[in-house]
Length: 120
Image 1 (cartoon, helix red, strand yellow):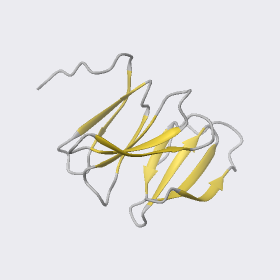
Image 2 (cartoon, one colour):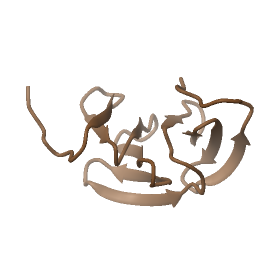
Image 3 (cartoon, helix red, strand yellow):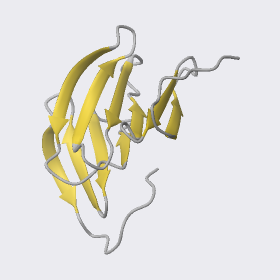
């Protein structure tokens, strides 16, 4: 058991890696977290209300590998595909599908009429 005091604001999310050996935490400045299913040391994170970016981290070195401006509102959730090298991001009521690692937009899904609260 351990205590980590690295956040300056409240913790909004916790995600265990696929192996269960690493735990990522997100605060108001990094709300959405998603561990990559095909590269165990790759973590995608997204910032709070003012930050429209998706950042990719090498969790072994702590290096930020890439930072992509989504061009839309706050990224509130992310989900990696288990079959393709793709990442789905949630922006209020809009979902965007990205090809990884190029981060080319594959599709924008906007069929919801109100805010989406969760993705699975």
